[in-house]
Image 1: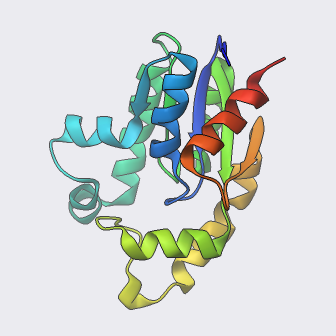
Image 2: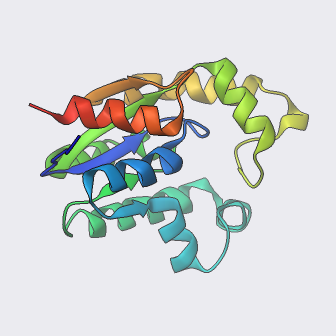
Length: 172
């Protein structure tokens, strides 16, 4: 099936939702470039996100995120995997809506927790401290995530199935 997209696509969702994995596949389906905002920040800062958080704090990281987003919005159409907290800033949501469509990868807590247990280098996740703070962060962000153009349920789906769902949702 041939898909066509004429706007930027911004994948949002909590950490562990699969934004980067799905984004790469969606970019192939739509024949568009793929950009991972977190990877761009790591390249520009020449250090990991965990290092950025530990040295300069979350606000500095969010400022980097906003700066990169604003620069990228001026470029050609692409598929963007965003950081899990990008939606918290109104200016970021406005910028994304102005030049594209926001897709929320909605993932249950059970699925997220399972994925986050296996991941490393996530500065806002410390399994030894328990999961209450992570669940609270997810709850805080829910309203922002839901302010999307398309909401895609990801539980029980492979990244390719999710990418196909998104592509189908983009059709007129």
